[in-house]
Image 1 (cartoon, one colour):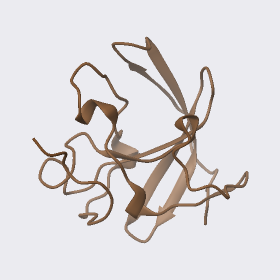
Image 2: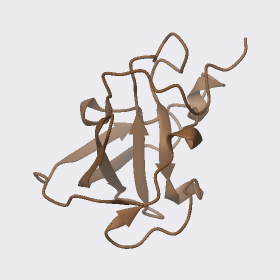
Image 3: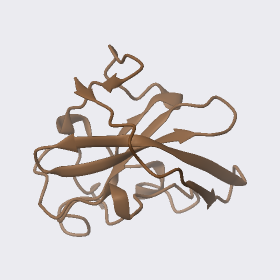
Image 4: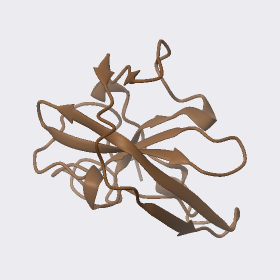
Length: 129
Protein backbone atom coordinates (compact mmCIF):
# COMPACT_ATOMS: atom_id res chain seq x y z
CA UNK A 1 0.00 0.00 0.00
CA UNK A 2 1.39 3.38 -1.02
CA UNK A 3 0.32 6.71 0.42
CA UNK A 4 -1.15 9.22 -2.00
CA UNK A 5 0.74 12.51 -1.74
CA UNK A 6 -1.98 15.19 -1.92
CA UNK A 7 0.54 18.05 -2.35
CA UNK A 8 -0.14 18.71 -6.06
CA UNK A 9 -1.25 21.77 -8.02
CA UNK A 10 -4.95 21.43 -8.86
CA UNK A 11 -5.37 20.52 -12.51
CA UNK A 12 -8.15 19.22 -14.72
CA UNK A 13 -7.87 17.43 -18.04
CA UNK A 14 -10.71 16.64 -20.42
CA UNK A 15 -10.27 13.64 -22.69
CA UNK A 16 -12.47 13.49 -25.81
CA UNK A 17 -13.67 9.99 -26.68
CA UNK A 18 -15.61 8.53 -29.58
CA UNK A 19 -18.22 6.85 -27.39
CA UNK A 20 -18.47 8.67 -24.02
CA UNK A 21 -18.08 12.31 -25.06
CA UNK A 22 -15.56 14.29 -23.02
CA UNK A 23 -14.28 12.48 -19.94
CA UNK A 24 -13.02 14.87 -17.21
CA UNK A 25 -10.27 14.01 -14.73
CA UNK A 26 -9.01 16.02 -11.75
CA UNK A 27 -5.50 15.56 -10.36
CA UNK A 28 -5.97 14.11 -6.87
CA UNK A 29 -2.40 13.37 -5.80
CA UNK A 30 0.81 11.57 -6.64
CA UNK A 31 2.27 8.13 -5.92
CA UNK A 32 6.00 7.95 -5.24
CA UNK A 33 7.26 4.59 -6.56
CA UNK A 34 10.91 3.48 -6.53
CA UNK A 35 10.80 3.72 -10.37
CA UNK A 36 9.38 7.26 -10.43
CA UNK A 37 6.26 9.21 -9.61
CA UNK A 38 2.77 8.67 -11.03
CA UNK A 39 -0.13 11.10 -10.92
CA UNK A 40 -3.38 9.91 -9.36
CA UNK A 41 -6.46 11.15 -11.20
CA UNK A 42 -10.08 11.29 -10.08
CA UNK A 43 -12.69 10.56 -12.76
CA UNK A 44 -14.89 13.62 -12.34
CA UNK A 45 -18.06 12.22 -13.94
CA UNK A 46 -20.67 9.48 -13.74
CA UNK A 47 -19.32 6.82 -11.33
CA UNK A 48 -16.23 8.70 -10.22
CA UNK A 49 -13.16 6.71 -9.34
CA UNK A 50 -9.39 6.61 -9.13
CA UNK A 51 -7.46 6.39 -12.40
CA UNK A 52 -3.71 5.75 -12.62
CA UNK A 53 -2.38 5.11 -16.12
CA UNK A 54 1.31 4.37 -16.69
CA UNK A 55 3.47 4.71 -19.79
CA UNK A 56 6.96 3.32 -19.34
CA UNK A 57 10.04 3.25 -21.59
CA UNK A 58 8.89 -0.06 -23.14
CA UNK A 59 5.79 1.60 -24.67
CA UNK A 60 5.58 0.82 -28.36
CA UNK A 61 8.11 -2.02 -28.11
CA UNK A 62 6.98 -4.49 -25.47
CA UNK A 63 3.88 -2.73 -24.18
CA UNK A 64 1.02 -0.80 -25.76
CA UNK A 65 2.33 2.48 -27.21
CA UNK A 66 -0.19 4.68 -25.39
CA UNK A 67 0.52 3.15 -22.00
CA UNK A 68 -1.35 0.81 -19.73
CA UNK A 69 -3.73 1.17 -16.81
CA UNK A 70 -2.53 0.46 -13.30
CA UNK A 71 -5.74 1.39 -11.47
CA UNK A 72 -9.19 2.23 -12.80
CA UNK A 73 -11.60 1.84 -9.90
CA UNK A 74 -14.71 2.90 -11.83
CA UNK A 75 -14.29 -0.38 -13.76
CA UNK A 76 -13.41 -2.34 -10.64
CA UNK A 77 -9.77 -2.60 -11.75
CA UNK A 78 -8.08 -2.20 -8.40
CA UNK A 79 -6.51 -4.53 -5.89
CA UNK A 80 -8.85 -3.66 -3.04
CA UNK A 81 -7.84 -2.54 0.40
CA UNK A 82 -7.62 1.09 -0.66
CA UNK A 83 -8.15 3.66 2.06
CA UNK A 84 -8.77 7.38 1.65
CA UNK A 85 -5.08 8.31 1.61
CA UNK A 86 -3.34 5.18 0.24
CA UNK A 87 -3.68 2.75 -2.68
CA UNK A 88 -2.66 -0.85 -3.26
CA UNK A 89 -0.22 -0.64 -6.19
CA UNK A 90 1.30 -3.64 -8.01
CA UNK A 91 2.81 -3.10 -11.47
CA UNK A 92 2.24 -6.81 -12.23
CA UNK A 93 -1.42 -5.90 -12.74
CA UNK A 94 -0.84 -3.14 -15.35
CA UNK A 95 -3.14 -3.92 -18.26
CA UNK A 96 -3.83 -2.64 -21.77
CA UNK A 97 -6.72 -0.25 -22.34
CA UNK A 98 -9.58 -1.29 -24.63
CA UNK A 99 -8.20 0.76 -27.53
CA UNK A 100 -5.19 -1.59 -27.67
CA UNK A 101 -7.56 -4.29 -28.92
CA UNK A 102 -10.11 -2.41 -31.01
CA UNK A 103 -9.64 0.90 -32.86
CA UNK A 104 -13.34 1.66 -32.33
CA UNK A 105 -12.48 2.57 -28.71
CA UNK A 106 -10.95 5.88 -27.69
CA UNK A 107 -9.14 5.54 -24.38
CA UNK A 108 -7.71 8.08 -21.96
CA UNK A 109 -3.96 7.55 -22.24
CA UNK A 110 -1.12 8.35 -19.88
CA UNK A 111 -0.44 12.09 -19.60
CA UNK A 112 3.14 13.34 -18.93
CA UNK A 113 2.82 12.93 -15.13
CA UNK A 114 2.18 9.23 -15.66
CA UNK A 115 5.30 8.48 -17.68
CA UNK A 116 8.23 6.50 -16.29
CA UNK A 117 11.70 6.75 -17.88
CA UNK A 118 12.45 3.06 -17.23
CA UNK A 119 11.11 -0.21 -18.65
CA UNK A 120 8.49 -1.86 -16.47
CA UNK A 121 8.92 -5.58 -17.15
CA UNK A 122 5.62 -6.45 -15.48
CA UNK A 123 1.97 -6.61 -16.36
CA UNK A 124 0.31 -7.14 -19.71
CA UNK A 125 2.44 -6.84 -22.85
CA UNK A 126 1.52 -5.87 -26.44
CA UNK A 127 -1.53 -7.83 -27.54
CA UNK A 128 -0.92 -10.55 -30.11
CA UNK A 129 -1.61 -9.60 -33.73
